[in-house]
Image 1 (tube, rainbow, N blue to C red):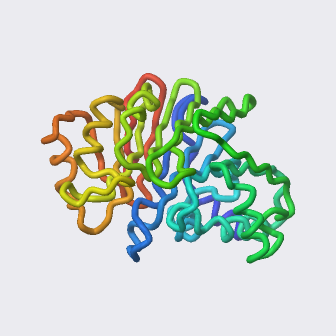
Image 2 (cartoon, rainbow, N blue to C red):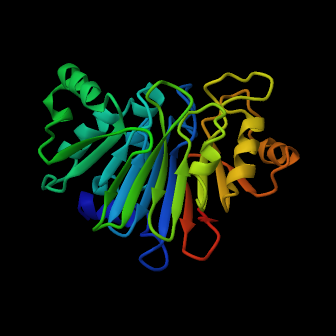
Length: 286
């Protein structure tokens, strides 16, 4: 069996159901602190005609292989901000896409991010090499302002951006795949307008970095998450980016105790969620 055939046998399945179905894989549910079960932020959204990676934090590239996703088929990468735990593996990803296909890659890759993306990738190219910007296949760089929208009509996908309360450039994302919408807070502190931005999402991937009592302006704690969820009311919420102080096992009950009764899961690396139009999102059984 060839290398490519072996990979095909263990890679993630195509999203179940009709062409409007979407599969989300949590590739990185943690922080920069070493924890092989919770690597830095990375979330893959796959549908008919697109494979979008939201953030590419440290550990993402090896994690994609470990979790059996089709990383060679990525069509877009969206970066929420330039902290290492959300951005640090982008050079490794570009190198892997350049050298990891037996016959090379011809398909273009769109890299989206906040203002400063072109400058930041230019500096990375100076440090690591020209493969960052010229990996042997077309790379399109798209800088998104808060309120900006990027779309691919052929794939039927739009990516909407909103300011986040973290770094000056930080963004939250809403992936609009027609009948299925997925939200991602990125890193953010409490920001009431996000409740409006995320209206209609079936799945919300939300950070919950800290415990109540240790709040900072740039991250969410359970109280902030519960407030956001009461406004958005997604079918399913997956909590990510938890520091060790947060009680993973008790967090869903804590969120319910704060007045939110919807379905909440604590994310772990490798968690897959199938989303079919007209059906509640369903975590895949490993």
